[in-house]
Amino acid sequence: MSQTVERVSELSSDGENISETDGKENTMEGDNKTQKKFLLTFLPSILQTKANLMIALMMLCIIVVAIIMVVKSLYEVPPTQLVVDHSNLTPAQYQSLNTAMQGQEVGNFFTTQLPELRDAVMQLPWVNEVSIQRDWHKGIVVSALPRQPIAKFGTERLIDASGQVYVPADSQMLKQPEFVNLQGDSEQSPLIMQMMQQVNTWFAPAGLEVQDVILSPRMTWLIRFNNGLRVIVDNENTYQKLFNASQILLNQLAEKQDEIQTLDLRYKNGFAISWKSDMPASSSGFGIREDILDEQDTYVDDANLADDIDATSITNIPD
Image (cartoon, rainbow, N blue to C red; front, side, top):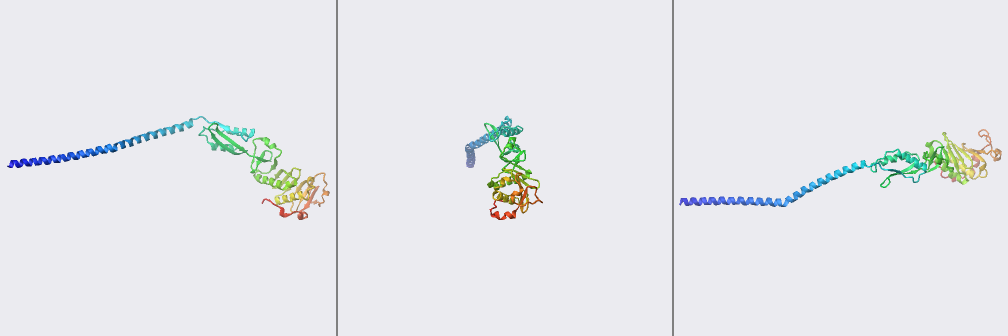
């Protein structure tokens, strides 16, 4: 009996052991299935990500190499052609600009420094504006716009509308007969040009046109007109005196205008008239101031003409 009980106990123990073993095996099988499922699910994504990273790295390497090759090729390109545009230029101006450009260092199409070329062109005194562009077909194209002179300044220079004094590229431009002759300190060039323009405006109704304007170091003005008349004026009430003179020539002295050689306005209350050699001084009808005037000079007292000049008609007198 006891043996039977022991046998049953052994069988029970064996059964429990078998059950535990089966449970562990089932758990392991479940874990294995989970791992397999995880690998089957995420492994392709991981592999694809790694592949993408490798591709991206390769592409980056290719791009870097390409950039290096492009940069290297830019510096290995032969020097580009420098073309000077002859539009709006005289032959002498074109030659001057072309000579200036030949002395410049020019790289290739991409590396040429355009600002440096522009600075070199602007060193030419006759150049007013410059344009430098890259052109695929021509190369580096340089275009310049010359200054437009309105008068001569001295014997070797011209002056433009802005009052800029410069040496022209073409010396033949100094021989233009229509140019007014201006003289004085170049620093005073805007003032001299302004005087020329203002005097022309005031004296034009009297049929007079400025030929020469000279400003002395003492700020004395000498103005010569197309009929030979000369006007001298100091720097005291200069514009007022000139305007008054223009009105007198237009009115009181209109008939004697061609007989006058010089109007001297350097007096406080009047002016002096110097007549041409064939015109006797006594015929003027004005009193002679022998103490301050040379022979054949007539002094005119402004007080005698004050009633004839309408002060309200004075306009556009610069400060």
